[in-house]
Amino acid sequence: MTIHGEHPFTGHEPTDEVRRLRARLGGVVTLWTASTGEDEAGLTVSSVMVARGDEGRILALVDPLSDFAETFEHTGRAVVQLLRWHHRDLADAFAGLTPAPGGPFRLADFAATDHGPRLLSAGTWALVEKESEADVGWSRLYTARIVELHVAEETDPLVHRRGRYRRAADAQDADEQ
Image 1 (cartoon, helix red, strand yellow):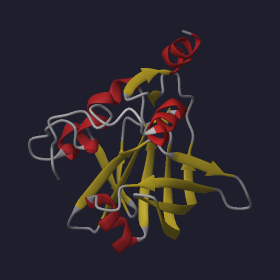
Image 2 (cartoon, rainbow, N blue to C red):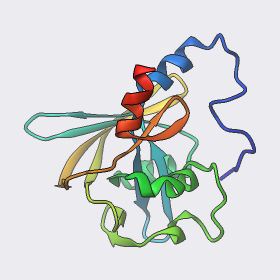
Image 3 (tube, rainbow, N blue to C red):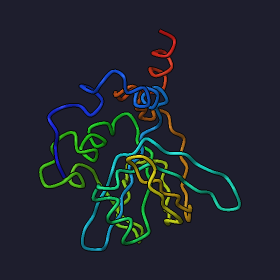
């Protein structure tokens, strides 16, 4: 994992309109985790969609060079957790934006599952199994089937929009300015 000194959404050409569009869409921040049994990997992901059907699906755009992608490719299983406002430091650590001495899994309490580590303080989480993958732009699009789901009332979701974490109400207020 590489820690970069600069923020990933600053210092880029202002003419990158696709990047600017993506920043304006925003989304709730999720943490994807997986484990081989010996090694654990996780990644902060905000490019996520949920598809309903007889079996629900979660679609996510993931960095194909991440440790998480490598582990998910190997195991085909993961845990997807919705993060809340108080998880923002954890989100930065799993995104590789801030140092995490001993690794980001030491920053919070996790329970081992057969799909990977589950963040105990996350109220909403899903166990997923990889169904398909495709390289899309500089990302890898995973489609994962939901095999177990726990949904809690989320009162303070962590939202990522325009390169910053925001509370859901703050994100709406920023749109109105």
